Length: 172
Ligand code: OFO
Image (cartoon, rainbow, N blue to C red):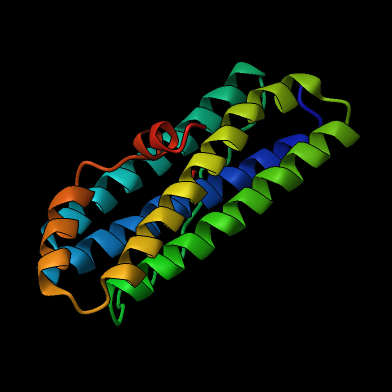
């Protein structure tokens, strides 16, 4: 049985994961409109992953006989000045999600809900990988600056990049 406090916090996290999915979908659309086919593919995939994170929480609450609140989402931002700015926002967003997961884990510990705390460890690891991925992409963008040929290769290669592939190359 979930405590009301844990259940409310899990529902808040459902909203955050769903909002992340919408935000990245909006980024994908912008990238596609602006001719960055690889970047948009990467972002469409990332958006799907966030929806999966939301669904995983939905299933968990139901499994524990709790009450899921399917949230309304605010309309995400749809305009970006550059791919660099877009990834800066993506990175900051991931940092905020990591913080939110940390607070959720803290609530579980206070409520002595070790089952949910254990379930959330998957999200703790996932955030570590996603932050690393966003940081790696940002670092690449900073290195490329205005090098057009580097941008061509970047847009081609990023389509195949995932959080797992970054974790594998960084030995995590
Ligand atoms: Fe849900 O994994 Fe990032 O935000």
